[in-house]
Image (cartoon, rainbow, N blue to C red; front, side, top):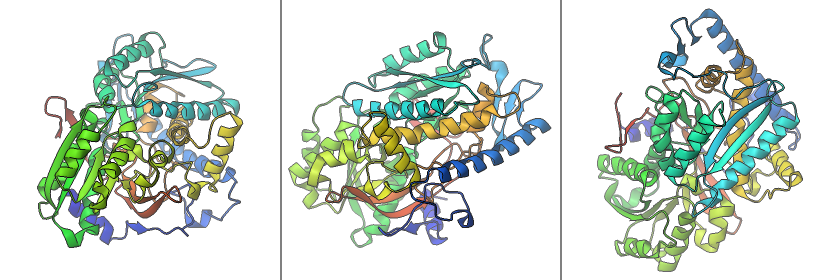
Length: 499
């Protein structure tokens, strides 16, 4: 069954929901309506209480499975978990330590992320993550242990990522590792998995980071780029029905990140010629200071739809250059990618040129978007940021809170399992995680299911930017939880293959 047919089945059965500006959204999903008696809008205690209830349920379930011997590390030294998830620990290095990074008073884990160069804005993510970890430390830590967060700047250069990962493993001896960037992750995830080190909530939506069989220690926090690409096609079919088939042009970052988008949309186009008449690809150098020539080439192709398949500052440049060339006057729709949804860094600087652009947003809320300011967690987080001397109007700092949240919930759960916090209990928790994230739109689940469901988020909003109000107008929400196929990725072919 094609992905498009699957999406339409979900739509027909009511999983797609329309939204209006008057909708009242709560930041905790997966909670019954009876338990959602409206608290004061600034009452973050409601969020903490619901998270505690969800943690209790998961701890109970995991403990029962571990005690029964069906999950956890068996006598054969194999870690087992939900839906066939397994890791043969006999293949780990001889000096592998299940308790690495954990002392009586401290839990160490590390990150490599871009803080300099063309994509430096993404470095603000770690500022937000650090702030949330600081809050956790100030309020008791994880089972009395303080989080030690080590973050290195790799400049979005894979060779630097490799060096810093080596340092995190050999010198810092961390419990787990987090990274950002598709080329960077593909350069190190074999190494990290061979070392049997957890690499959860990776900051990329490349489908390769959803491969629990070959890379059981690695998982992503984003909507898969392949799924995002398919959802672009779904939007086109449903909203441009009177103009089909349409010509689509894409500005593609010339690396593995852009390739994932390109191949994902090409698959949709090839399967649906009655929707996409032609798919034109124009690639750009990730380090280039301008995309003016590329956008001129795109304009000459006279597309009906423009999709920006890039990241960082080039997203802003794409919006500005599209307006400068006049192409937006003839387009039926233009899309920016989920990684550039943040308002402060990429939409607001474009001014009126950003008005009307669409996004398949992956469900993450932007703390700078006024429509969310009264929500309990975001209200609290914005005050926290101000008290810590951080600017609550920098979108990526706020998003860092949302990315840190599942780390903390997973650590809390793992620390209460039989044997306490270990690498194996931590990764077992991650692969079983089903705790709502208050930074994700209501109606989109955030969960894993062992080897069967390797993706934390499989839902998205379809939103259109209002430059006057500086907000994303949410038009629809679609959740495809549990339907994204795992990806055994080949660096040689650049494609996912069956295991």
